[in-house]
Amino acid sequence: MENYSYPLDFSWSKEEMLTVISMWNAVETAYEKGISKEAFLSAYRAFKKVVPSIGEEKRLGKDFEAVSGFSLYRVVQASKTEKAKIVM
Image (cartoon, rainbow, N blue to C red; front, side, top):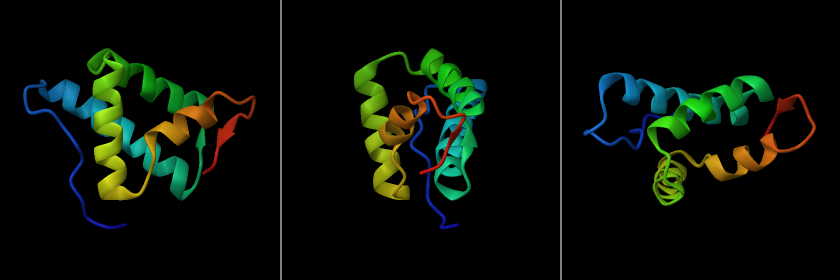
């Protein structure tokens, strides 16, 4: 795994940052070995409580993809299928 910085907003609380980091970890897991749909959606729902704005989600997702190569958007889209596991 390469070293890179997660896109975070330093106005968030420690708990909010941990929630967003968990989301980025879930996206990485989807790409690296696959993740259960349930586990991903749980992380995504928690993330949306911290980042309710679609615009902010898109901006953070693009920033994350730029540093990691992993797409939040593509994993979210994959989660909308009937499959129980998300593998990118």
